[in-house]
Length: 92
Image (tube, rainbow, N blue to C red; front, side):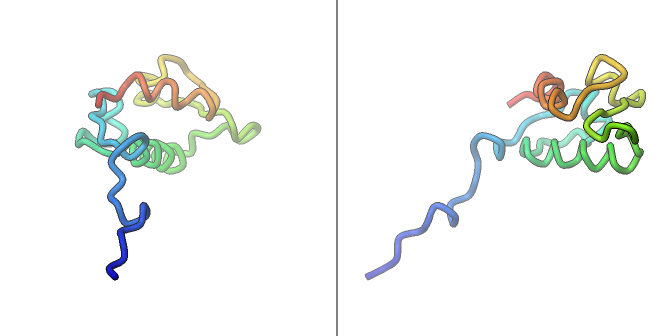
């Protein structure tokens, strides 16, 4: 009897894995190619760490540089608010 494919074997294409198109502002940080939403978040975090944009006194706060300020619309956001601003800059 043949085994049925498990859910883990199925390609993930919905929700956080659905490809999205970054806006030009977000594209300046993560690139302009369509990416899964999870990859967009990973690339934003990589950018934050590369440019040392976490507040040293409060690691939950992101201190936006010029590129991230265009995405967030302000100088600083918490890591919990960040996804809300990123969501406004991606299109399914």
